[in-house]
Length: 256
Image (cartoon, rainbow, N blue to C red; front, top):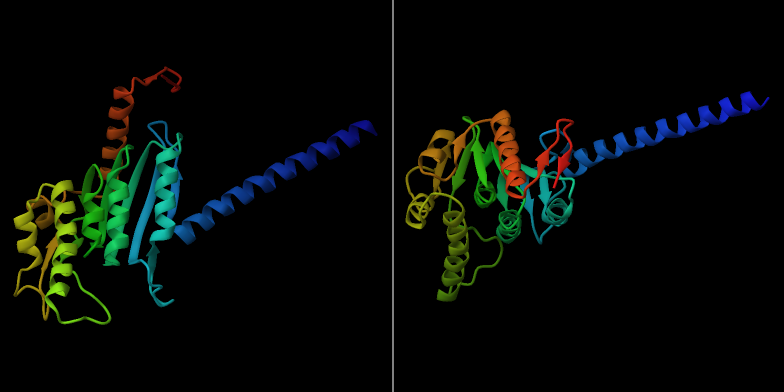
């Protein structure tokens, strides 16, 4: 009787453990579905993958049919990544049409100020305010078929036709220009020239850069894909560990 009771409790414990694992996997799946994020464990280092897709939503809620990345979701994630000792690096994947300037610039500033190694990969598009986000990492990649649109800032809603409005636009645009030139190899003058170029976009001002073009003008570091981005990120993680005096044992453990 006691043996049967023991087996019964063992089965209960095993079932409880199995249910816990199932719930953990479900939570991971929900996290990827809702927030587009996941953490990957690897002997080389644990990386957190953060995706920025669709339109970057700022202070105004966009229509429900729009695919959006909400900055109030991204900013706490970045804080958690920086503070989590188990995460060694950040992989930022971009396929965005742009969006709210202040929200996008806030995210880009936070990424640039992080101490952990970070690499970005532009897939499909990294347009408008997605450009500062793409260059905010330590190293950036762009897929050969991906594009980046550089154009002046736009404003929705009421516009007052006074000189102060133009000055406000110019100062806001200067914030973007300064950030991009500071975090990439392109100069301010060259970036402004691309931003104000005419004749390339129909009924618009600006420039469309394909993969090779973005690298040629030193906006992005290299043309590549996922494997290239991961390899570079693990390389940066290893360099940081060596700098901090972290030594690996033959068993793969890390000693400070």
